[in-house]
Length: 171
Image (tube, rainbow, N blue to C red; front, side):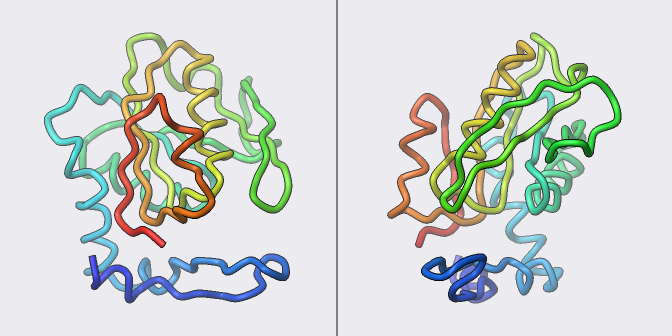
């Protein structure tokens, strides 16, 4: 994991003063590090009854789509408002520095689906919890949540107590 941790850079005061942003751009720029992170994200879930992978806009698309591809499963995009062209289900949630809305196509998953949720970062847990809620509103089961980075002091894992959580790097 040291190899991956060296590929995460800190950007102070972004997007606002007092926030230290964990920038994954150097990680995704390095094909070997990206490949390693994807394999480490999916490894605990090999052989499990997962039927789809979901990822949150935007960086969750990077890791989620690659995990889905590696597992040979469909990728379900969870998007910001107004980006999905079909009927959607939406949920509002709080971020560590504001609030947001997340949407999913109403036919993305159904009651037979067991979804692995992927994102780059777990901070306060608002985005992940909202994503789980959206998936469950459509009748599917959230099998687990996996993240490249977890900011432990922000307590996001506590919001996801009813889910299995797997994080590669802890800060």
